[in-house]
Image (cartoon, rainbow, N blue to C red; front, top):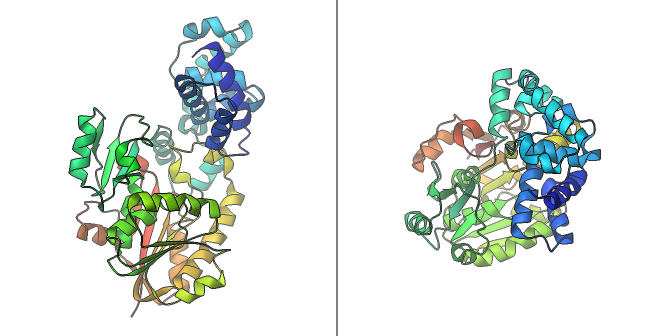
Length: 419
């Protein structure tokens, strides 16, 4: 860390720690405005800024309104998150900053005693989770999502086989291994820029968390079927489902955001998929959806959610969400699930998923749906995965936990319309 890099990091944190925008958007905008920053500069700035997010509970306990003191927040991140000694920073520090870092170090035991600082979870989230989890489980959860995530890849089966692709990556010297559950998954343990890699450019590889890959398996789409991805986003799961269907049949990729769907189109071309039909809708009640009522073999609802299972990648989310935003999401999820159910044909499958760890968004939402829709019945996710030769049993619902499974926190339920 050079003095110039420290100043840039402080400038990034002044915007990031207000939590008004996603952290990665703040960082991207800053790098766009400072095009002369080299790759090493960007790496140091990004690592330190995200270390500040991961240790924000401790930093804010020691520093009032950290976004107004971003240089001190950056220094604290170097000590707490990046393992630097105060002596290594001596050339950067004035007397007041040295004293601040000394006090920070001396509070180490105090930080271990408080659940919010030990688990790096804000009080609102502890309050939301505590009725369902004990304090020990909260500590395990907080610590597991406070580590950076590895990079999970999915091999596009239309273009390659996992064993061959994995061998090729290992031959290049990459620290790669087969993902433990997904038959298409590869896990990279080093930070690698893949967007210019030949296997990425030709559509053989896609970046996708293993949990999302398992969701495509639960959809279980077959060649020639009609499938609806109700909240397609940029289409990672849509692409996985399309490959499962061997490019036969039709996938309708609905989303309310034109920009997200625009990102899907080049990915479809790269993946060699022609059976996907992206379509922007105004909302879950858009009348254009009605033409598919009772016609879809499979409907996937990867619902808008709090994203609290993705904190390894998005540590700022726990500060941008609140009980109020979660309550709004619960209403939206219920409405979307209700609308999506109308598309499912007899004996068809409805899959509901979130990247949340809150039961309100997960089990409770599904139980409410099943109570209101007796024409649907739950299907055992463990049995579906076993049939796909995946050795993972989390019960009737798929519940992925970062500490136990090394994936994002993830939930899925499969329901079938009775015939």
